[in-house]
Length: 607
Ligand code: F6R
Image (cartoon, rainbow, N blue to C red; front, side, top):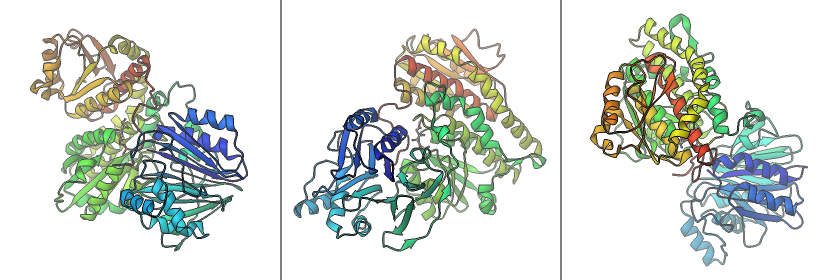
């Protein structure tokens, strides 16, 4: 949610920190701040976008080549300058930025205030600066270790001290911190996107570790001061993946990257000779997977809808019983995990707090826990027993698009792997594989209709409410289509199982309440047609997403968007694209900030 950048080296820190914050802005962005060490340390903060901070920094032009910076997504206390980070201790020596939540901050604050510490903000984070101050006796690393030993909750922090002008201390528990090591300079950030411009040598900090970085060097210890030996890893994502290129928004770029993202998800993962998927990440647990009887998929938001789709796919291709559960609910259920239960956590960021907590709970109960994650090296990827990466590339737009279709593709591969180990025939396996291989070109054909979809957005975007309906494989797509419209165009949209509509929401239908009906000519087509008729009878306007060459829908609906024909199970990988484009064009037409919708953050690291 919040973002951290830190720099120590030989270059002016201001450009590197501000540029880093801009790259992190997609994670959360209601205020920001920066501190740079110098004879007179520089500290400035601003409410709103990073551009507001940037203006101040350019005007002040601070010197110094050691600094820390932060973008905040408010949890404790409103987005105001005093609540923005960095926080400063009472002596003005220590500057600290924090991501996460300090759960016991109230008793800590009370104790610190009784001991004479003066607080300037309403945040939980500020206690950390005072705890480090209290623990400091000349050794900053030891002070950070001692301070963090008193803390409950989650943190990723960066700390600088005027008496240590050539080093930055970092620490993590539950909130990511990555170090980037260059020649005579080092960086750290909460997300590799802020580092990729500067170095391809990175080090992922683990929970309960403290790192000390200096120009071109780093060392790591545990909170108990035991040394940790870890080398750097090569960062595989180049800086160009953070550029928008000729696209006006990252979201549009990422929608158009989907054919390639699906190709990446499939690359090297198909065994044609045996009609099965090859998923190296699951090899170590393959025997347990083959004995599994039950699958529970846990995730949030768009990843939850991918999971819902996965349920239909696993039920179709395997004999597993499948449940999907919102991670935020799953983590607090009284879990009675049956023997041979596999839990699959799906997450783009790999850092979603609820999904992480859910998988930890499932692990504690003895389940085999798998991950389906996009961000390499993220917490969920590291904490699951085994898993598969999406390889969709960095997703910058806050609204998830290419990650969704990558997740769906891999869910099909996983179901294929499990199914072929059971009673799914070679022919059935191959028909899925052929369909999957056709998906990227089918997607390209849909993307070519973007202008036509923009015209539909022009026609409908004045409506205030929308209904999205779909059945079976298309039901999760109705939910996802509605979510996209809500989150980026701020239009109210209800996603519904088409058959459920007459149990309530049909009461809403009138000429000002259009419906997006996902109606490819599949096994549920006739049933969806009946639901479309019910809407028509109430004078509701309908846009249908249907199969190319459909000859029956034209007279029943107002507008049609055609998608290529493919295997019924795979059609949702196609039908979601027009809905993403529709939401995108509506948002642009309504003047919304597409890549950074209000109140949202890319990586939801708080509960
Ligand atoms: C919607 C969206 C969110 C995320 C959700 C889970 O477009 O992006 O609903 O899907 O916050 O995030 P991850 O997948 O990172 O766990």
